[in-house]
Image (tube, rainbow, N blue to C red; front, side, top):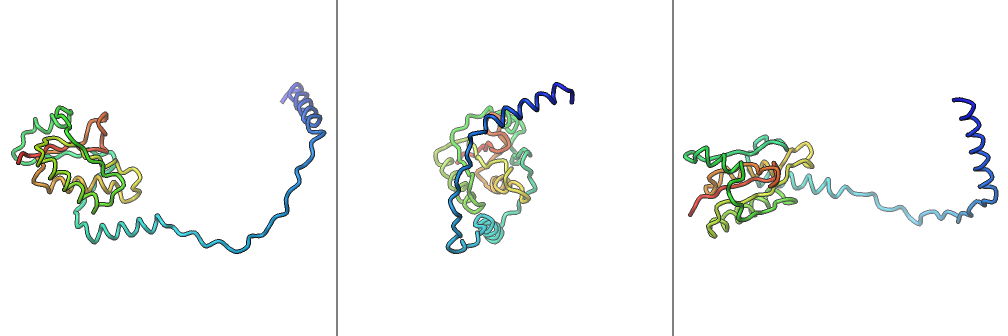
Length: 182
């Protein structure tokens, strides 16, 4: 530091002392000890998450594939031309309905998805979007709903093909599904 910097520090210190000359400290109220100890905090969400994992492992019976948050989902049944899957990936099919599974357990998501697909086929809907999220907040378990949707759609006879949506339509957090006619 040079002489000018030292002089500025002294001037700043003097200005501060002059400004604070008439300042009186605030009077503090006496501290009151707590009447009793508060209950120990409980990790509600950690316990709920463990319970949900246990329920899913007992009741789900899904053979989850190892899909990562950024991975694309791609599937077509035997006999479905590659051009159909390519068109689905490019967003050439009009999305006629969608379902958002965010926040559901695998068991709940499976029930909602089956009902949604059944209703869509009854209404003769051909292309739907399933929003499952990318699974970025799933921790070490990976994208739980995304894996479940991958397995459930592969098992469903109603599904001809599916592919992750284009970035403008949800990217790898959503899947476009082409349904068979009744």
